[in-house]
Image (tube, one colour):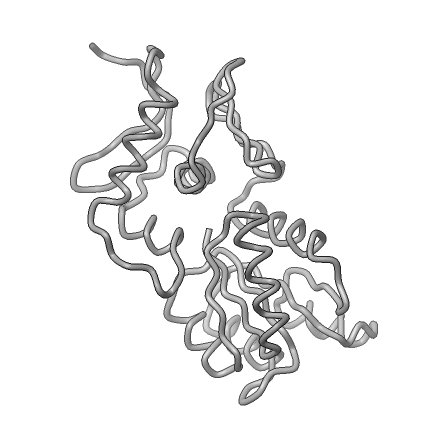
Length: 228
């Protein structure tokens, strides 16, 4: 998953970004002012936007208002030092999905971020089940049947993104854009490598295959019995 963090306090921004990367496995882009943040939000696909309200150049409230006015629907978590009832109501009415007031616990921020990402993908519970495959998005663990599967961090991130949209065909470009931050380097075959690892770890030895490549289109997770 890819997150945009719009926060002008450099130390806080780095702490939040590090927590989201390490605690949730998210790719994180950072913008330090409202104008740059709005531009990035409208030109890239994000699974979550974490938005401070007190920003230079363009306030967080204005960023949120313009973003929603232009029909963008990624979930937005507002970070604010202003926790008065009136401010909270104004934020939510402008299109925020949740808020957290400074100072806050980073563990709570991660939990709220994960909940909003799940909600944005239409997933109500933290455990995603597809046939006999089960992903716990809180613990970041994977099981198929009674067997626990050990995945590399990027393998897990690819699998989780696919699992949030079962049966959909996800292009390689979409996966790259949601799994890497703004500075990612475009290695042409990196997704193929992760898909190959997932297929080996998840599908080998099972008659029902879950990880599928649709040549020229992308990748999908869905149960299909091996035809061989």
